[in-house]
Length: 394
Image (cartoon, rainbow, N blue to C red; front, side, top):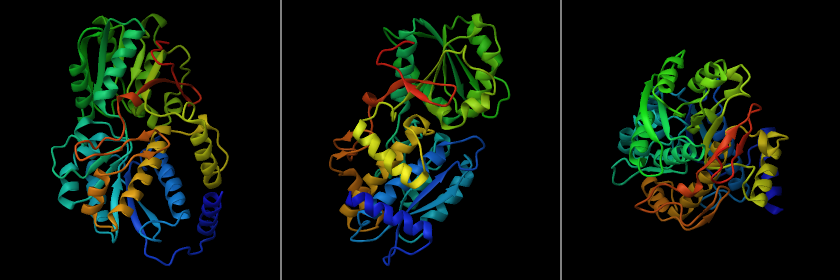
């Protein structure tokens, strides 16, 4: 109760424009795809971060009474724009780390720059394996998110559970797409469906019907679809207008949940067999933790039900990551990034919203989640993402 009252005081003071702190703030950056039409991922990450920041500040801040402060930059999913933002953010006084957004290619192209700058990157969404497996020592990237090497076996197992013996793969010609296809190749073996063919597409394609039909004719009984919401909407719209006999199950990577998919599709999707990989849902989270978080959300952003939160993985991952970072700052006793990085690598166990981390990071492992956090879900027409029972083939 004391924490909640403190949070309300901070929120009310901020809303009124009154200063709450005399101490200099400790800054956290967020460089994400805010300007991308139809995207909800950056906004979800921001809200998760802001709720955690308000909670930390209500409890006294960090380093003996300094508030956390968020600095936001829009990269519009463009690597060059992100590069400019990172260079600028790195010069900010007492900025300890930057959170990224959804797009793996943006992060992958700037891994070298981040290490040249000695800038900690906290990843709440981007899933390409090379983001944390970057070969850098010391490694300045920490992730609390899905990895492609966990996602793609889950998609293959789900296809098998649906009875598919042969699958086609539709992937973007990007670092993320190549990471996903490499993970599929590593997952081949007994009990897994055979991949009949991989079709590549470019971001911004206006039609994906041709590669889809080619996979159908090659004998695919389901499609593994690596896509974000924009290209996802293109294919879903086209498949929804095909004869039912040509509508294969679409088993999707989670980029499609980073935007207003249903609105972008624009046609009824009730005939489609859709499923998507996820790592968190407010619908199946620990009830006590979920209700507590929803209470904080409502105090800051107004009424909401668990099923109404857009891009829930971004919200929850970012929330836990801020708390882990705040604790590392306190253990470091400084805003020095090298010391904070070392503190993150030696984090103690933490009981978070997404899971209990025991611990979240080590010097050898900068991924806070594991394959045990991966599950399949169904994206509904109203935007709700509903988890499927374990092993469910739907």
